[in-house]
Image 1 (tube, rainbow, N blue to C red):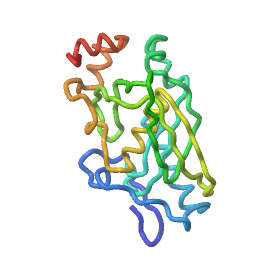
Image 2: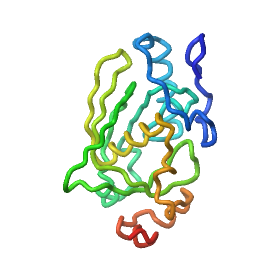
Image 3: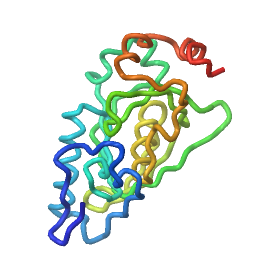
Image 4: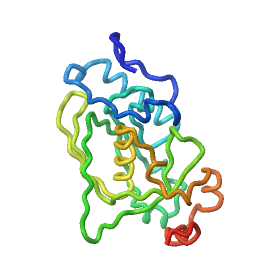
Length: 207
């Protein structure tokens, strides 16, 4: 929420059903760059992301309709995955990054088909589904101080960026999921952990 007194965050990550998750977020205006209010918002987002825990968060998930995202992935967060799972997902560490007013451009080329992996969301707790995403993206945006940023990411980091930028446009992963694959996170953990993508495709009759 944005008030005349500044930016007011939700005390908890908001869940699907809250209108803030379905409305396009507003660009951050030049008057906010370098301010204590913007830094405080990003600090709250990082704290909420780490506490959940998750690998990304968008400002609307804390009830703030501004185009701000944070992301971070570490070896600890992926320690439960087998070497095969990490390789199939192209999972890679992502340093803590905050991007203001991100503009995402999918990079499509021959030899880089879309990829399908399980995806969840802190605003849709308890569920996961297979979601197709492009392999590589480029993102332009601004830092907290208003400096220009440019990122190019592939594999899992690209998936995080696509997921979080979707939030800024009022899109949830359930809008893009392969609906036959929707399951609880517990079912995904007990039934599908360690399975190859070809096995998952056959199990859910996706091909």
